[in-house]
Length: 381
Image (tube, rainbow, N blue to C red; front, side):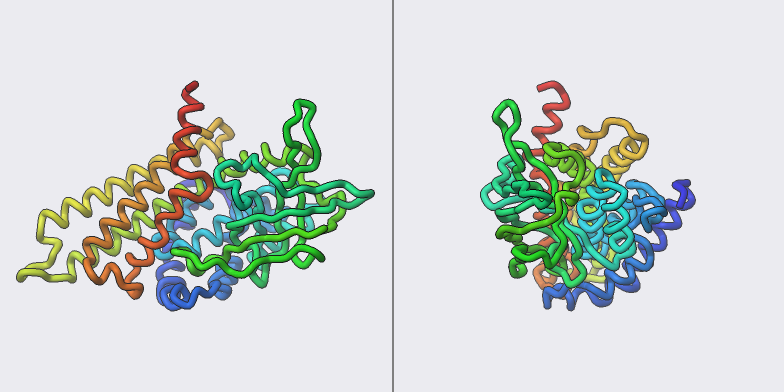
């Protein structure tokens, strides 16, 4: 696909309709039951959403990251679990292979992931590591023509579904000349002996998203499963995270806008003291603030995505977008819940789901504090 304004608009409208007609009617029940939305994922795969920024040679749509972000915003206006499944499957599952993989690795993994027939995952975070992604303890030693991997990962999205095919794992593979850790990235296929996926986490939000802990006990994979250059795994993943922050910003804007959508509708329907609550200035001002936050955050992710697509440096802009948009999502979900009153505390209403889903946006793919650190560094501080 090309990237004209008209085609961006057509894509956005198509996904908006899909989210409204296919996701909205069923996601509430799936969320309460904490079920992974396999049917929805299959339909999104058929639409090509998982392969948007991947070239046609490898089964993708030949689009770009801006198109992916448009999709994520529209999905998250209805549900963030569905949106994060696409974001993680594409940005974290496929893009490391697409950016750094060999021709053979791309040919093996990307067509199924791009088509939504399979999901990839991104194994970076470790217990006790948190924001210190460089504190990797998982190890991989080279024995003959095999890597032998030992360790564990936590909070890994899309890692334990029935269609998960591969996890890209960071591991310490040696020592640098300066004494630091040599961290490399290695592809581990699902079902490899010694590779065990933990049970589903009990989470506050994102209840239709698959999130697991991973364990590696003498896991052996071919030496050819090294992804990219040995010792460059950490740097590779940092670049992937920069891209992912733009995507999470777009997802956050979708949630923030969804809160506006629901609040405007409710303000027309709900009456108090003989009038629709939308007649009262207190409600009007609150919704106006919500719209302003969503609008400003949208400009931030669009600016960052524009620089990314143009091949320009975008690290600072990505951090700003992620910081501003996640704040907007959290603030808007809180205000929407307040506007709905007691009904906002009920799971049957979308704003209750939005409120539960918003907080992780200030944590995942770099906490708000990490974004501020990145911004400060880019300013030379």
